[in-house]
Length: 465
Length: 80
Image 1 (tube, chains in turn brown, purple):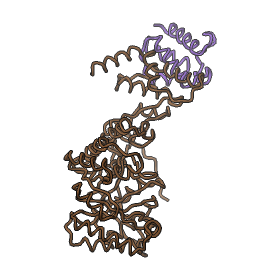
Image 2 (cartoon, each protein chain N blue to C red; image 1 turned 60 degrees about the vertical axis):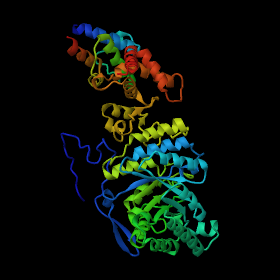
Image 3 (cartoon, rainbow over the protein chains, first blue to last red; image 1 turned 135 degrees about the horizontal axis):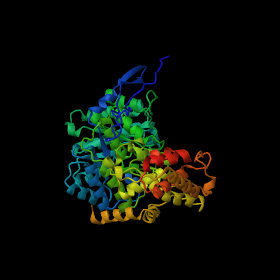
Image 4 (cartoon, chains in turn orange, yellow; image 1 turned 45 degrees about the vertical axis):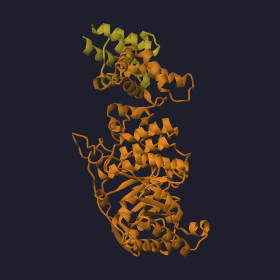
């Protein structure tokens, strides 16, 4: 057994190479992953993700809209604009997919096109139906997704076809797309429940054959649709649920390149984000996501989570503007009127709010103790404390100092705010209250117990200094 | 301010904060074990000392004091 000795240090080891605080925590890999395929271990090098051109594709207006009432045109345009700002000039939010079937969808596409933004590129989504190419062409789109369901659940029971009939129909539509100069993106629905060697790989090999003479910008893309969230990120699980095997075979046995492979997940088993992140790590480039994870049933990979993951994996922002995430969440809640869960990471009202006094005490001493990264600098959201009977005088001090905008030596001690804490405790112990103390109630207490500070703060706010 | 004056004031404030008669307070009394202070009461007591002595106290140093006698010593260092 190796013996570990306590190491005495003068300075704390904050592991800042992993937790720089000015960025989300960084993800590093120290070696290759071994995936057991056909009786042998193959190597997948996750370090490759550092240099590969990984990016996010958006489906807020397609899968995201399948889970909610339609957005208004102006809402789609504003969100599209913000997606562009979020992804930055390097197109980390590279594409955004739209329905083409309603007038509202088409009007929204035209309005988004009129913005003249380089990213995200607008792509379409159609059923595997030749008639629908008219819509794609009319909208001036160069790429469209098309439904090419791959499991026997879909082929036999939904489409009432044989595998041959399904493949023939898909290939016919793909050929028609190529003839019309539209880049096809085949959405292999339900792939994590499909007979991979019996249908998916033969189909993809036929697609590769079709695409071999095409220029790079017309080569067929493959979207891996984990329609029911059955995909597993773990190494060495059997197909069809294995994400590493699926990606490895598509790249190494079917010849699809990383830039033409995309992951589209669902959250039925709470794996939606980690499956998406692993799909990057296992070797594909495009992670399809929706804002705040809204999508069919349990939703899709949350786009803002994918962006944070991107920064963690790359170790740099690469033009991403994370503060737009907060703007989008505000817009979503205030203008669109869709509530986000308070504990939802990065955007929920309480994502960096503590209720525990001991955590508030830590936050008051050094923000890094209980804040995941510098959320004020990166997201425009300072860590906050919600006041209950558990938040303690430290919690009150943190809240009051934040509210009054006091910093460093100007911050008030627990002694200065203890009367407010007594009032809070009386609410619970004497009045038998069961709800959180609101910001308005706390403001009132500040006015009563710290009138000179309150007046000073109000004057500062009024004068804008 | 003399040590005796500080002592009287510490006794008065402490008795008031704990709802006791000043005569019942002893220098050896521990705030937590003998007088029953919880964390909120400890802060209220320090806040009361701060207000009465018209001082801005260092929070951590002040809250480290554990006995009535310790409080007298603490303020003696600051005021005498």
